[in-house]
Length: 373
Figure 1 (cartoon, rainbow, N blue to C red):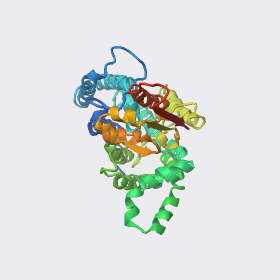
Figure 2 (figure 1 turned 90 degrees about the horizontal axis):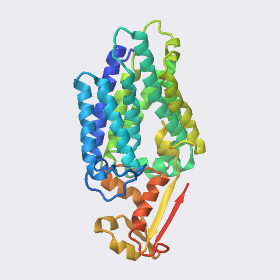
Figure 3 (figure 1 turned 120 degrees about the vertical axis):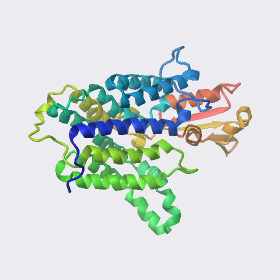
Figure 4 (figure 1 turned 180 degrees about the horizontal axis):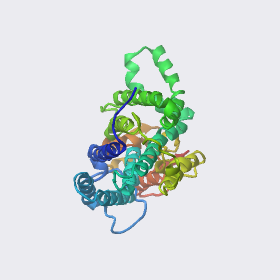
């Protein structure tokens, strides 16, 4: 199998186009997360008076404008830099915007700030391309590590395959759930296999089938409202082939050129070294190649009837009676309103808690919250 017959420079340009287009579509699929009226609490990382959420639409319009102009005008690196800078500020406005797909696309796109586009430097272009490959492969490997826990198999994986529960017998579904124990190892194999040329085509095939299945399982419906996450599987398939299918190295290329590039070392630290610290909670999942697969932090928030009556009817929809209190389904609230998952972070959970405490006359009673890990 020869794979795609494209030069390194052609692949790099197609990857840049794919990343920008994926960001544009994904932001539009989760537009309420970026601008417009919303009731789900905002979680600013730092408190600044001029970070007013009512002007978010201006920032996101500018970001979209910079993304588009980076595709068609000169000084592409300038426009990409400005877009990435504004994306950073948008995350400062609300931590919940740091969705796994947003982090992944921008992590790859920010690399293009350091790409000059010269076709007369094949060894430098190849080194840059390998750095992009390492970042992309790290997402598979570290998400595999993050899934090495019982919670993923018993809860997350079962939820993922739930759409096919009605299509198979109970015995077959129980068997499918047991496959969940293999998923972490498959993801780690894909991550390593994409880097090892001798098994690359096997890794590409497994990754391709995995994303095809997720496109089916995550298909937009009343139970799957994270449209950008669903679309990311299509983007991954396209990037997968542009990055790894066919000959992806120049003739007589030596890895000495890779080690001579300064960019290699911060990328290695940020995407290869630091994600290992997720395992001991010394580095946040949402700032690494890992996503939320291994993050077990959850919020249990209950309110009394008096506070419930002060809520708009829309927000009452996400409350479930339990004993004399009402349990908040914050994940469903976030998905329904923002078309995105709620980032499992204490900072985000405290913002939700503060929202309900503001409705409470008696700060000692009425709101019962517990954050567990």
